[in-house]
Amino acid sequence: MNAILSKFVRKVGIGLAGAAACAGVALAADKSDGRRDFDRVLVIMMENHGFDNIIGRLSSAGTPLTPFITDLALKSGLGTYYFGVTHPSLPNYLATIAGDFFGVQDDQPSCFASDLKTGQACHRFDGPNLVDQLEKKGISWETLQESVPGVGFLGQQFPPSGPQLYAQKHNPFPYFTDIATNPARLQKIKPFDLTALKTELSHPATASRFIYISPNQCNDQHGLALASTVPVCNTDEITIALGDKFLSQTVPTIVNSPSFTERSALFIIWDENDFSTSLGCCGQPGGGHVPTIVVTKNSKPVRSSVAMSHYSLLATIEDGFDLPRLGNARTAETMFSLFPDSDD
Image (cartoon, rainbow, N blue to C red; front, side):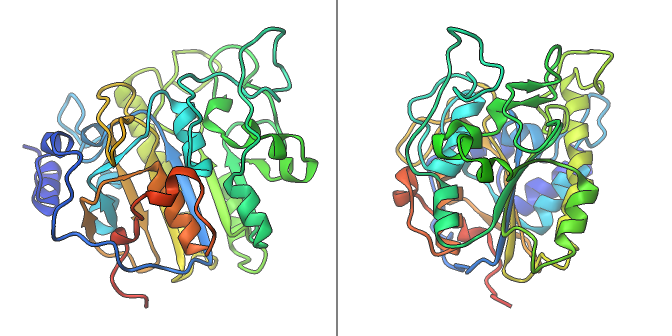
């Protein structure tokens, strides 16, 4: 067994495949205390890989494919029993900001897509969402979508033809009527640019307090077919390595910024495991066993086998901002067991 993988298995104290097999069981030693009152939260959504495929992942040549992610998992909060809520991608993204996936089992575009074709199947939702709650409380927000061509973009993909670097299915915000039809809220849907994010986070007084980041489909580990017009991310190994590189550049930029305080949190979440299993937790079928990492200013090695899902992510954000819980988040376990015990 490779040394980095062996170290991880010893530290986490479980066999990687065994974690999925025991998906619905929480160890008695785990706890859900350590609640935080957040001043800033960032979420980075990754794609389509299970826990075993990412943490400690080796290449076919036996070299580490995820050295940054695996090291971060060893040093930070690691959820060993975190699950997507269903398949495919879109409903999992919806769940993270609405506490429900509304029965969606596909990746159809928003009914507000600017390039929607006549008769094309689409989705729109009129219910409450996290943006409603944040704005009611006066908490600033934005979503940074890598490879969108401009602010407020409502297209289904970009580029408009060929392989999709940006895919609307990974951006839940324009599916909600009160976001897609509100010009001020559309201004909060922005391109991801690491230099711009660094500049924003250098000014704590004006930086958004909630930032939801979706890398493009090369950098989020989803992958694309080979095309001359986009970076090569047409194999699983290449895609996984690109995601590790993206996080190795983005996470330090966030954590080392003046805006990332002792009461800030960065959640790195994988949406689902691309049908490799249908295991779920918390009394519901799900989208499989996926990694989740929580990074704080003073991160310490913490692991939790409390059964969690995307509803737990939303519940944690809502509790930390003192907001009421939406939908299935009302009964979800929080992720506070992944935080260091100290509030220092």
